Image (tube, rainbow, N blue to C red; front, side, top):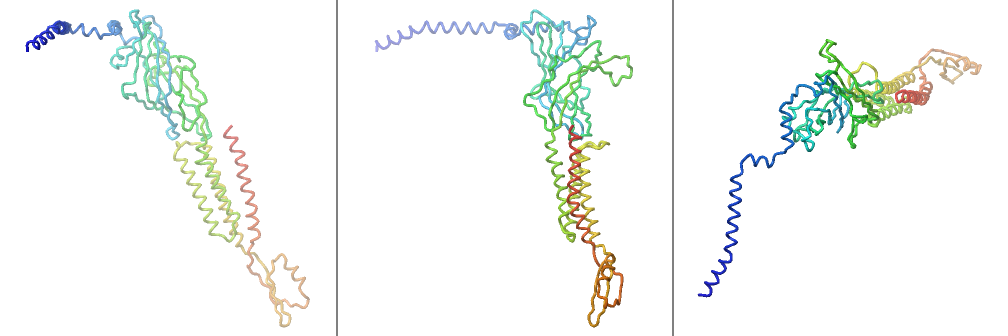
Length: 433
């Protein structure tokens, strides 16, 4: 047992210095953390640039423009990025846009050489402490600020005093469309920006460059093709204030030139109505006596084309002028109705009886009855045998004029398609060009 006890003592003595060193390290860390003040801990995570910003905002007045002290208007350069454009509704004459509004200006009050980098602020409370342009959209009917998943706002302060202010908005713009050529039309829809309360003496709006309206590369419109975007600057009067001495307000206008795609309307309106017209002409090849078939065909096609015309009107604004689609549907209705009228006339003519003469002769035991038209009566009597005795001549109504009715049907087979072809040769070049 003696040697084993000595071995244990030797191992404990060898580990003693390591235990003492670990104890001193633990005590140093614990005492150091206890002695550190809250202010020193806060400074470990404090951004020096934010401290500089707080110092700049101590004497900052957001109620005045950045160039108020030199009596010049503050130039605000704007840029739009169109994320998506909804379908233009012809009934309400508006369209929905999801866009980013970017505004840049220079504020000498926020210039500081102590800023080491640009500061990006997205806290709405902090952003409200700075001066911002009071830009609004005059032709917007409805607008929403995006909050998903955080408020979509960014204000960047550069060390040289340049400010970038960006918002994401969902807006519904009005578009006063001219519908005379609908749906073969081209429209111009505007996006307008203006200063709400600052006149041109205080704020001047400008486009950032000639390409200040940018589009998402995957942006597609349902019914239109975007031809070009025209950027202009304008000045407008405040509509509520009747006093013209109040001044002009700076505004910007982006004009979107749109060409309507007619593929949808060809499939939904033009081709079906054309087929209905063609079907109405089938009655010209039916027999004159096929009255039930011709009546069913004519009435069915007329009701179908009328329903088609009413359906397209329900999706449009009730304008007071005639549209291109109205001309087309009206003409198709006319051709279908004319085919029905043609059948009525032919049916009446086929059953109309005309004056004929019945001539009875008596020669011994033989009796002969001849039924001839009035126009050929004299010629018939001349060719009869001289021994014949005319016993009775009377006026009757017997024979129908079927030949004339059939000739009208044959003529209609050519006249109706020819008339529809002439209408198409006039309609399409006039409304497309």
